[in-house]
Amino acid sequence: MVLKNATILVVDDDADVLTALRLLLKPLVKDVVIEKNPNNINSHIERNAIDVVILDMNFSGLVNTGNEGIFWLNKIRKLKPEISVILMTAYADIDLAIKGLKEGASDFLMKPWKNEKIIETITTILRNKKANTAKQDNFKSSNIEIIGDSDVMNDVFVKLKKVAPTDANVLILGENGTGKDLIARALHDNSNRKDKPFIKVDVGALTSSLFESELFGYKKGAFTDAREDRKGRFEAANGGTLFLDEIGNITLGQQVRLLTVLQNRQVTPLGSNEPIPIDIRLICATNVDPKVLADEKKFRKDLIYRINTVDIIIPPLRERGTDITELSHHFVALYAEKYNKTSFSFDSGFISKLKKHDFPGNVRELQYVLERAVIMTDGIILKPEDLVFSSIERSPTSKNIETTSLNLDDIEKNAILTVLEKHKGNVSKSAKELGITRAALYRRLDKYEL
Image (cartoon, rainbow, N blue to C red):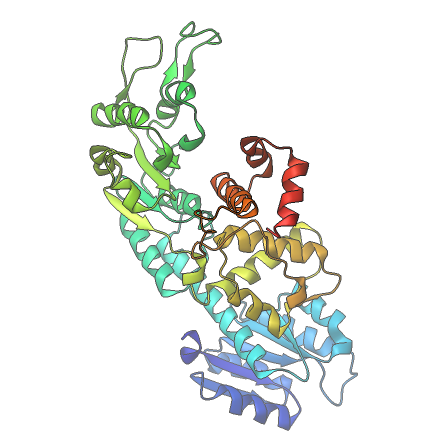
């Protein structure tokens, strides 16, 4: 637990507050230092390795405007910017607390506080520090922020650290929305090829006619619309990394063409007899169950061996424990800035409601849920009622309607669910495949409460 090695400084002129916080935190952390006089803050942070300061915004004997807290916040930030500061304030001083966030405070808490909220806030701050330090150690050249401190994500980070500097081909496995593209980018950014191109192709979306022209390129006149020479993605990625997303969805014929290129390390553009040597690091990703990839009727075993020198399995969000809290703070801060809103704090039930949801859409679903909450809320404290979960996403553990049912409503509902899942919730594509209009599909979604 990140709390056990932490030293907390509590600064408040109310002896009861100091006693209460010391009793609360002492069993959880390495040390709790308490101080009534803010003038002694400097000596405390010089003598002790303070991780977090809990700072009151008003002190007796001064003008109670809350500006005392801002003053001491700035002092701490100037002396030791790595120390996190949590402001303690009454409800009437929320505007000043928000000003404190802009001045560099990590968070604020209102009096009277809830014990679980204080512990959660400190834990999140310390976990973010630890995760950022780990990322600096493991991925110093990466501009991608991969958030997580759960055991399963730390296992992923360890594997990334070992694999990234090599030229090994990597197969990334995971459900939709788990962040496979972020992992691919992190592998490239921390490889010896980081200054060379990173080219991503969603091969699962390529038709048979586009597969070869997009990947291998073509010469002018190779087909009707080929008005000029064009490099394929393999050639464009030469010297760098080629990321083939949704590799599990390509046909057996496409697999043969891909295997030939990987074996010979050269491509021959359409309309040409001249092979072009290629030097790429290959990363592939798929949400297809590994059992399907092991079925030779659907995927060639020799191709699997080529693309899968190392596999990295990205865990679904429901298996990542406390990462959901860290991710929530990250996305809320991101969207607050994007939509020019003030900083938000969380009601105690907000995170609890998130943790109870199984997030079949994984991190991507969490991201959209929090974006909507930031947009729609009128306050500065996010509450459970601000969370609205999509009816389109279905839990991977939930069972389909019995396909043996001959009830027409059951058959129609099952067909809609199957097509929506196939098209990842895209209503336009789903309606087209079902042979109905978008409006008709929306009416059926409402009818079946999907």
